[in-house]
Length: 119
Image (cartoon, rainbow, N blue to C red; front, side, top):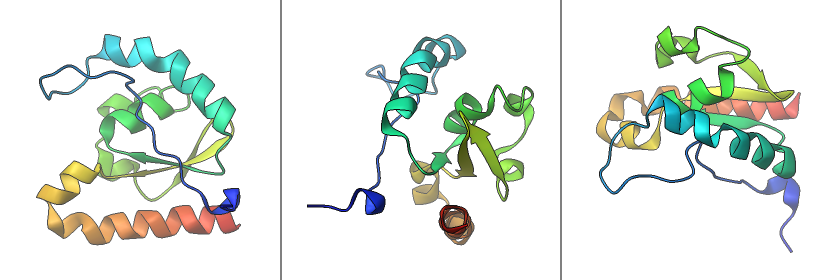
């Protein structure tokens, strides 16, 4: 079997999406908040990599009330907490497909996440 310590679990902060691709509305993020909280409690991850602005806002809203006004780039490079679990912020994969020059920065974020797990 697979060693659970080597596993990754991928999820979205919004549990349902409209047919038209658009950013989630604040009410949609709020409606999914309890599902996200319960999902994290059940999965018990060692670390959360918040990929993208809306993931970061959803996970950091309680610990960083003005998170919505902080650019994603300024949220990177430090470790936050959600339900006591370390959170590292990085770019959304779709953004990285469009903005190749930020892939190196995303790699730095992954290295920070890995180092956080190891410490």
